[in-house]
Image (tube, rainbow, N blue to C red; front, top):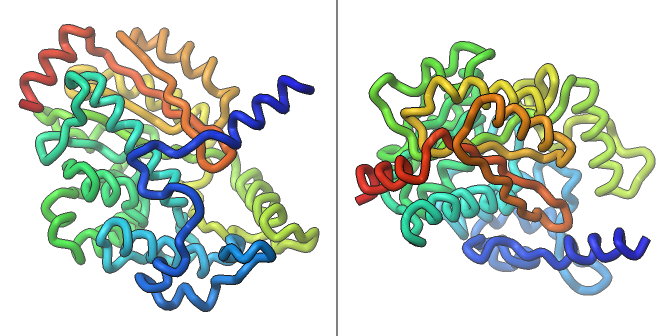
Length: 322
């Protein structure tokens, strides 16, 4: 019991990445200045701190708009009804830890600017990873998705911001069973891929998990069983869930071992790590890393792998980032 308590205390004490703009509690006064419509959803708690009802999709959407305006200079951002509304602090954590991964290959300096190209596998309607990655580090992005409607919405967001328009290119993935085929051109080089894979193994699992999440937030046994946090099928679930999705990505990555420096994916469930590490060994990667991070009290991790040796990584660095 004491060991479990110690672990919980450690997780509670975990802090965001030092580069993450989202430290501590939200400054709702500043966020309301950025997005006045948010004010209608802000309420004062007993301890005088301010919050919103995170079970209300409109409140979460306005919070995201305010964060993007105040922290990333994104004046227009919206998503269609039922699409995934991402938690921005967590998405930022991923980007900053990926920056550290690249830093470890670049003599302790984060590579910045348009010389670095990242591929967002499954950019979705929200385009959140390219927004954070470009606005923070100046990276160039390719965003792929199998959902044409999602890509259209991402295009509308990107086209409203000249800096993003020059830095983000969108590409359709026409095959559901592939991740890089048809997206990465034959003579193209990608420095890092990122991915937030579908977590659930079925639509029923996704809906049940959402109902539990809403119930927990509202502390109400009658919480409505609907996808309050959004997400179309391709965002929320796939056959075999997160484990199978990432496993398939690992084997697909073998065909692009010469063109990509680092492949990465979010892995939400710790029990998926061992079978995925086995898949990496089977794919004969040269190196892999598990990068843990916290979203509030929840632990997550990034799985990263490369088919490059240390010498090849140094050659890549000198050839592309200098």
